[in-house]
Image 1 (cartoon, one colour):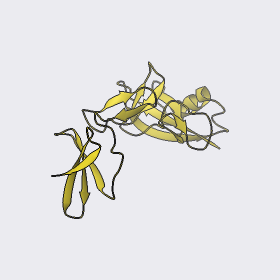
Image 2 (image 1 turned 180 degrees about the horizontal axis):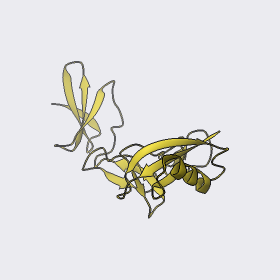
Image 3 (image 1 turned 60 degrees about the vertical axis):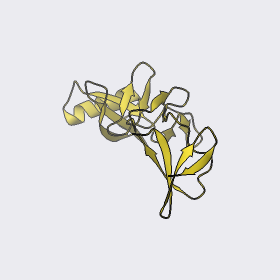
Image 4 (image 1 turned 135 degrees about the vertical axis):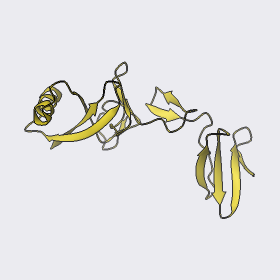
Length: 146
């Protein structure tokens, strides 16, 4: 088996991802020591993560570990002991119940076959269906033609 590790910079941003075999990393401390020795970087900062943990759920039925799998460009939150993916848009905020980014307008309930995208400038969900364009109105829970 393998253990997965994220290298952090001085701002707690994830700058590298690596894996270490269990024989070299029976625990997190040993894995970190192995990576520091291997890369000859004694002052580097590494944290273990679980590649199957997403939105604070372990996708293989195990116990979630550190909120999310680490991702390049994502960040480490030392206060809450979790990894965050990169913020998708400036208007989105952290949801501390599932360690995921939350848009200011909830995801539409019904896509009606539309391809969906977030419009940051107008802070709304927009959908495309063929050549037709729509936006999601959360007040009426319906799509409105643009």
